[in-house]
Image 1 (cartoon, rainbow, N blue to C red):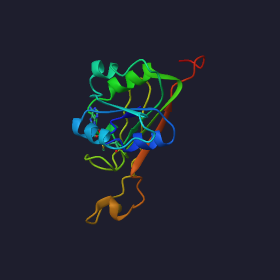
Image 2 (image 1 turned 135 degrees about the vertical axis):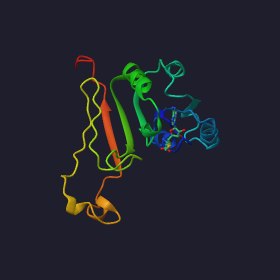
Image 3 (image 1 turned 30 degrees about the horizontal axis):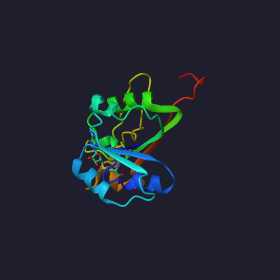
Image 4 (image 1 turned 120 degrees about the horizontal axis):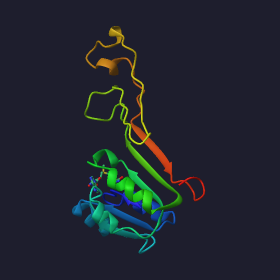
Length: 168
Ligand SMILES: C[S@@+](CC[C@H](N)C(=O)[O-])C[C@H]1O[C@@H](n2cnc3c(N)ncnc32)[C@H](O)[C@@H]1O
């Protein structure tokens, strides 16, 4: 499954490597573009217009189950990822993977960069350390960027649904 597949760029790569892919996006124009590309092999990709914040329309994709799901540079654009995570918990096969990439939360958001952020729900949390308070580093036109340059642009996460018998 290619979540929020846009014009199908990544879905086509997966198909070229032998996967059968369901790609969806809520932007009809993107799905029109995706469908306009030739498929290699022919018929390897099925596209759908689906808003992933809407559990009911998402459920229209249920029943496969999926070996793997990917969301390439998309989760940070999705208002509510709860329904998607619920769907994947139900529809990824045991042992199946969910891989996503996002703009790195350290630097890639519109909010102030370099702020520690922890999202805690159900025992899961993501934390990025902040730099120590040091006024001597805060000066300059670029602020922190004048002193630290090697910030990660993207965060890539690979999750795996536990296999049957492995607790879930
Ligand atoms: C930065 S693009 C990435 C597209 C594609 N994954 C790629 O790698 O080229 C983010 C995509 O998320 C889609 N999107 C945003 N919110 C969505 C939602 N609620 N449901 C489905 N797609 C959504 C947008 O339409 C857009 O195509």
